[in-house]
Image 1 (cartoon, rainbow, N blue to C red):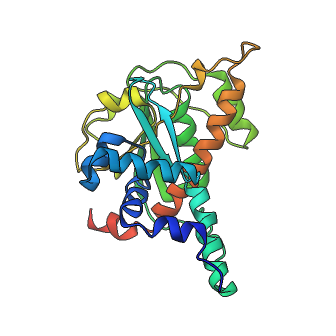
Image 2: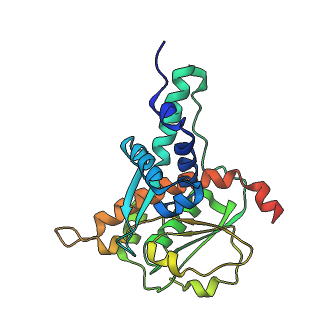
Length: 250
């Protein structure tokens, strides 16, 4: 008899499963995970190393405070690992991927970053492109500035027209959203509270405008950002599909 698949052996530990669950909601620092799971930091760090070794979790230094590290769960790898585990038990358990565009929920989502010139308008455009009229989406910044031309360029490559007027997050602080997603470490610290107790999520993403390559270009960094946002928003759209009851309650 063959051994259980690696993901099953890894996730069967109760603490690792709790860490996976917490990270599935957004990027976290170690001290936040320690508080959430109620376990000592050395034990949490040990299991995070196990998850990183399996390439299910990635770590990145905070762009706001370099002493902090954010941990991110690679949901794509988790999906592949789960599919492999199901298929190893029985071929009929391999499911077909759901159509992320077929969402029946009408949720209000706000993306926030510092400049509202790259990360947040790109996320707004990608979610609107995927979900269409089923979601109401906006973006804003704590220090808005004009759209970066490379943001417009990489979106056009994906067939998405990025036509956005940068706005200040304070202008939206009285609006109700179901989800508020911060996309940079700096804005997370200054983002205002919104009425209605929205679900607050953090995605720790570096500013592509600051990632200049040897040729003096930021375009490659914007392409990497677009790919990362598209992956994350694909999973977000699947979550929105299952939140119709939450919208009805509000």
